[in-house]
Image (cartoon, rainbow, N blue to C red; front, side, top):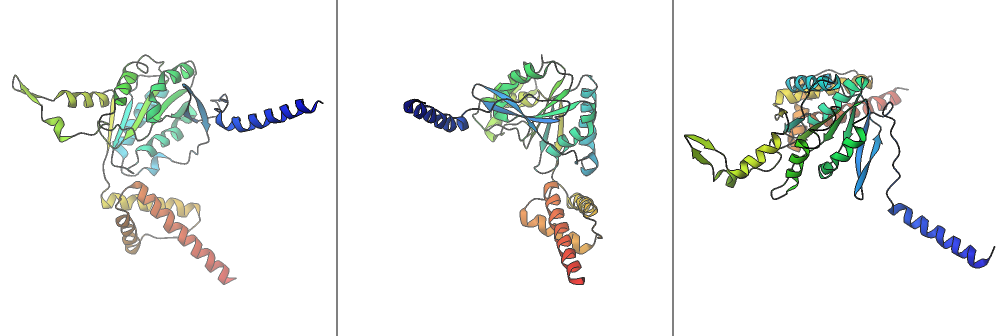
Length: 302
């Protein structure tokens, strides 16, 4: 082979090797019979769905103290998977109180009935028409899940979401539904200045245009579920549940004591969070330490 041609081929191979990491990955077709969840990835002017491996080990019974929210969201989802009318849902409230966990538990409960979960980031909600086009003709029922949805003051993206909810999804096939979680009830920050221009008309108090605009966004969700900070009793009940669950998996013999409760409260106080996430973290730490100590004792006894 000519030396110049060989040199050209080698340079071309080098160029391809350097460019490949910069190119968007090839979209792999998803088998929704086997795949239970996916994530929407932005790529250039479009995007693609990336299949996710998920564990279905989180159950409704693991969510302690949110029975009312669990019942309402489960009923709405049951209607959805049955092909009946159902609402977009907004789960709002204190962090770490089970909002996202409840959505994941829904997948474990209804995956066998055809429910599938697609995660989509807030900044990618404008891509919903593309998702509608891709998924509308499929037999599965798709929950579009946007975690930690919120908008800062001055951002105009929340108006895009209003348009999307009223437009794309309202006219979409009935196999798509949007569930979102947020720490804010109205998804955007509420300022004291928003209340300065309320007006009295015919004896009724009417909010300012700024307030109306913000409330109108959350109004697009037909189901609102509120999650509140844990009381100490609620927190300890969740700690006890997770210790029991993890101890059972590790074949650890244990008992609930006042000393253990005090240790759990101190753990939460040190983090400034008394919620479900903190309870789970303490349970993992405590059970892990007990299993390590038991292992050391077994070695010493040999």
